[in-house]
Amino acid sequence: MKLYSTRNTNLEQTPWQALIQPMAPDGGLWMFNEFPLVPWETWINLPFEVIVYEILSIVFPELDIDKDFIHKAYAQFEQPEIVPSIFRKHQIVELYHGPSAAFKDIALSVLPELSHRAFIKSGTRVVPHILTATSGDTGSAALMGFKDSVFPITVFYPQVGISSIQRRQMTTIDAKGVKVYGIEGNFDDAQAVVKHLFRNDKNHHYGSANSINIGRLIPQLAYYFKAYGDAIKHHRIQKGEALSFSIPSGNFGNAFAGYCAYRMGLPIKHLIIASNANDVLTEFFTQGRYNRRREFLHTQSPSMDILVSSNLERLLFLEADDKHVSKYMHELDHEGAYLIDPDLLNRIQSRFKAYRIDEALTSQTIQTVYDEEQVLLDPHTAVAWAAAERYQIEYPNQAIAVLATASAYKFPRSVLNALKALPSEDDFTAMVELSKLTGIPIPRALRSLEDLPEIHTQILSIAQAKELK
Image (tube, rainbow, N blue to C red; front, side, top):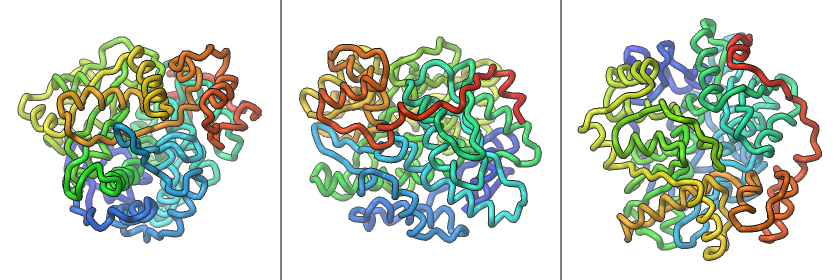
């Protein structure tokens, strides 16, 4: 299998090489131009770890993938099933049982070992330095995954907007080769810093734990196949019948992984893009216009507070071609917006639906789902549930799986407020109060966080961050 730059197909790379050289020299992202069809029917009853093994073996055959390393990667998950589904009005796919209590753990638990195998195979003597921008969850998951690896790692997070729990998950990590910096700006600024450092990296010294790295995307395909099999087992669909997925969407990596699963043969009716008030993706999927020239809003779902969704160019590459992507990305860089042609929009809309969910409806959804379904949603998952409800008005008989991307305990004040409980002054008091109110245990990954000292306290301007070596 070959990967090509989304902006110039004359530039190509093998998947294993892209693990340690994650961006193309022209600033594009590495992407397949076609997908193998997989025997998904035979995966329906497989454990999640085995599905991961099957997918990684197809994409990275040169790395001699073995089940033992995958088993070790997921040993820290609190749920033996790794990604269980629960069934209420909609199927809820729980992706937050890993060491950082968010869905990013699924891929970032295996990416360090994949990267290490690729590094050894490359024969290079220069150990790549992992650069990561985070809107709240990627940073902690990347640090958990890479802190004991051979790779040094630097994480940039926005100083304002993330929860104190998200911040402390990063700033309390005490390990050799780990650096964590706050950025005077938002996630898009942090992501721009990482891309700037990559563009000026002539010697390939940098790797990435963001979803610009194809190694972040590929493991995520597995939970779409697992969720589909669970839907069959619980009689929500028949084998071969299409399932729709509602996905909290910011940088578009999670939803794009679902699109890749569809291209590999999984019967998916629609991928539902659930946006918060930063609705740049919903505008794109409904109108065909991508416009980042708008106010950046801080919401109670901060991991979706993003205006530049990097993975969208991979979708455009597959539905159009590299020339269109190059044109659109040039317009985005220089004018802040681009408009795709109607035929391309129609093709994309055949597989994607999109909805904007405001703050009031997010809070209302948390309360309603807890009262009626006895399920505690975090704000991001609440956005996806609310989008699923709107989608079902248009498609009343369609089965829907909602991706639950984070534990509610990462955002306890927002959740308590939605449940009309007394507001708490800090997240850690709120965690305890939320557990008392609901009887749901605090995840192991978050229980002792308050007692750990914050080691990484430096805040950088964007200019300072771009000068780091």
